[in-house]
Amino acid sequence: MSLSSNNELNEWCWNEQPAKNIYEIFLKNKFHLVCPHAKCNVKRLFEKNFSGNGTEIKPQFSCSYCKTKYDIIDFYINIIKGKLRDLPEKTYYHKKIEQKSPTLSIKSVKNKSDVVVKIEKFVDSDEELSDIEILNDDSEIIYNFSEKDLSLTEDSSKKNSSYISYSSIGNKTLRINPGDSYSIVNMSASSSKKSNPVVITSTKRSAESENSSSKKLKEFKNSKETDSETFLTYEEFEKKINCLKDEFDSILMNQNDNIRSNFNKNIEIINVLSNRLEEISNIVDESISEYSKSGVAKINQLTKDMDELENFNDSLTNQVIVLTNVLEKIIFIDNKYNEIFKNFDINHHLQFIKTNILNGDAYSDSLMAEAKSKPMISIPDSSEATKDISTRFHVDMNDYDDFILKMSMVGVNFNQKTNACDISYKLRRIFIKGIVKTPKEKLIENLKIFGFNFDYILNVEMVSKKVYEFTVYFSYAPKFCSIVNDNDFITILPKFDPLDPDFPNPIPEMKKYKISSYIYKLRHNIENSKSEVYKNYANELISEIEQKTAYLFIN
Picture 1 (cartoon, helix red, strand yellow):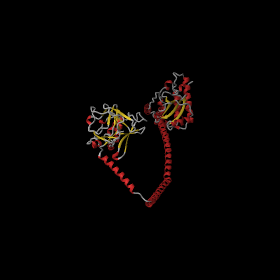
Picture 2 (cartoon, one colour):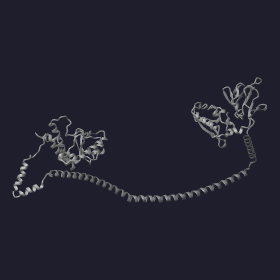
Picture 3 (cartoon, helix red, strand yellow):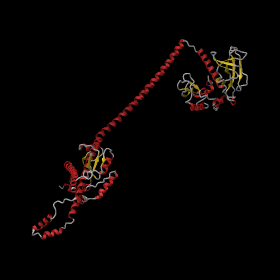
Picture 4 (tube, one colour):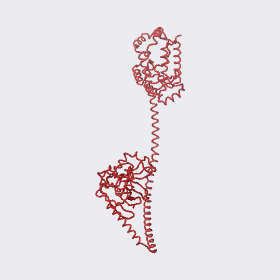
C-alpha cells in the first residue's frame, strides 16, 4: 500500500515539485540505496521511470536488477528514508486539496452502521484511543498497537496538510491511505477479537474524481442498454455482413488502384534515373578513354623526359667536375710555368744567339757546361725533406683553411698537415674505422644505401684492419663526415695516416716498409681506377711522398 494509489498523484510530472526534489536527492545517494524486494535486498542501481501519459504521468523509480517499480513517495519514504515534511509543497497537488479537510468514515461491515469522523487536526498523544488491531482481508494480524504507540508523524505546522496517512506504530511506519480498505477490530476492554469488523473508507472525494466515477458508471449503463437493444435477426446480420464485405472490397480495390498507380509512377521515375545514370556512365567512360589515349601517353612521355633530364643532369655534373679539375690543372701548369720563366731574360738569350750564330757550337757548349755544373738528381737531406712541399706548387691555403673550418662544424678536427697535391686537387683522404673487409663493389653498393654519393668519392681502399681510406672532394667532405657521424658503427680517424705510423720512433726500415706498401696500393689503385682525376692525383701524391721520403731510399 502507498500514497501512489491516490489519484491526485497522477498530476505530478518529473519537472514539478516534489518529484523534481526527490530526483535530486536520489542523484546524491544513488550508489547507496538498497532494494527492499526479496529478490534483491542489497545495494542496487535505480532508474528513473514513469507510467501513463499526458496529465496522468506518474513518476516512478525501478530497480535495475529485479525491475520492481516503486511510486515516487514510496521510494522516498522507504528507500531514500526521507521525511514528508522535508519536501517542497509548491505543486498542483497541494494547491488543489489545500482548501478541503479530509473526512474519513468508519463503516461497520455486519450491521452496516456508519460513523463519520471528520479529521480537522492530527491526533495528539493525550487524546483517548482504544487499543485496536488492523487485519488484512485474510484476517491475518498486521499490526497491534495501543494508544501509547499510535501518533501521527506530521509536523505540527502542517496539521491541515493532506498527508494524514502516515502513522508511527512503535518503530514501524504504517500507511493508512484514504480509499484503501482495512478490517479494524476493536480491542478495548469491553470488546474482543470477535467484535464487529469495520472498514475505513474515504467519504469525501474531489469533484474531479466524483465526476470521473459518475461518468464511467453512466457509460457502463449506456453500454448495457445499447447491448440489450441491438439484438439482430439472422437475415439482418447476414445483410449487415454482406454490406461490410462490399464496403471492404471497395476499399481494397481503391487501395489496389492507388498502389498500382504509385507503382507505375515509381517505375517511370526509376527508368528516368536509370537513363540519366547510363548517360553519366557513358560520359565517364568517354573521359576515361580520352585520358587513356592522351593523358597516360603524356605522363609516360613526361616520365621518360624526367629520366633523360636526370641522366643529363648527372652527366653534366660529371662534366663540370672534370672541367673543374682540368681548369685547376691548367691553372696549376700555368702558374708552374710562370714560376719557371719569371726570371728568364729572353732578350739576353736572343742577343747571345745573334752574336754566336756563326759559331753554332759555342752556344751548345755553354749550355752543356751549365748543365754539367748542376747535379742530375737532387736528393734532399732530412732537413729539406721536412720542408712544406707547398713550395713545389702554387697552393691557395685559404681554400684549405675554409675546408678545415667546415669540417670542424661537423665535429671533425684534422690535426695532421695535408699534402700539397691534396690542396691543388681539392681532395682529402679521410680514414674510417669500423668497416669489415668487403669486396669493393659490394662495399660501394652498401654505402650508397646509407646516403654516400660516389660522384664525389673518387676511391675507397682498405689500408689497415677495419680501416678504409676514402678520397673525397673538399666540397663533399663535410656532408661525408656528417653521414659518418649519424651512423654509430663507423668512426672517423682524424690522426690516422699510413704515412705517419702510429708506433713511436720507428726505425727507418719500418717506416720505409710502411710507406713502400702504401705507394704500392696507390699504384694498384691507379691501374684499376676509371677516374682520370684520381689517376693524376695519385701519381702526384706518389711523387710528393717519394720526394719527402727520398732519404729513406738511400742504401
